[in-house]
Image 1 (spheres, rainbow, N blue to C red):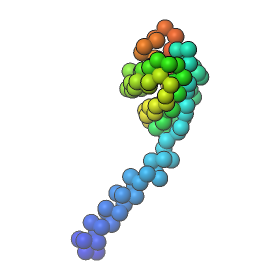
Image 2 (cartoon, one colour; image 1 turned 120 degrees about the vertical axis):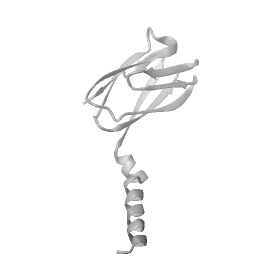
Image 3 (spheres, rainbow, N blue to C red; image 1 turned 180 degrees about the vertical axis):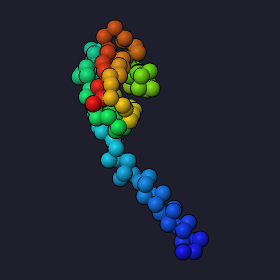
Image 4 (cartoon, rainbow, N blue to C red; image 1 turned 60 degrees about the vertical axis):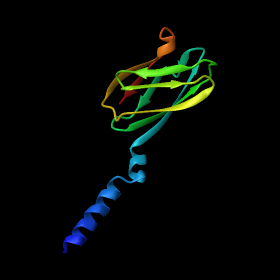
Length: 113
């Protein structure tokens, strides 16, 4: 096989391995609501080994910061809006998160199984 064909084959394999279709198979969509400074549901159950795409719907008039040092994420969601938070893939375990602006009431956890 010529050098050019070998390089072209390698590039084709590399592009296929990183295609958006392959990435979508490794993602799981979840959603959560923040209202009255409380997350609902309080616990999210997710599969291990998948990237989680979490839609956070803030129904409060004030902003909230979705934060989790364990998940290595923090994102401010303005009042009356929706935002996306991505994390993972996760190993089996429990990961806590909280609303940084209302830590006493806005608490939750992600359980990866």
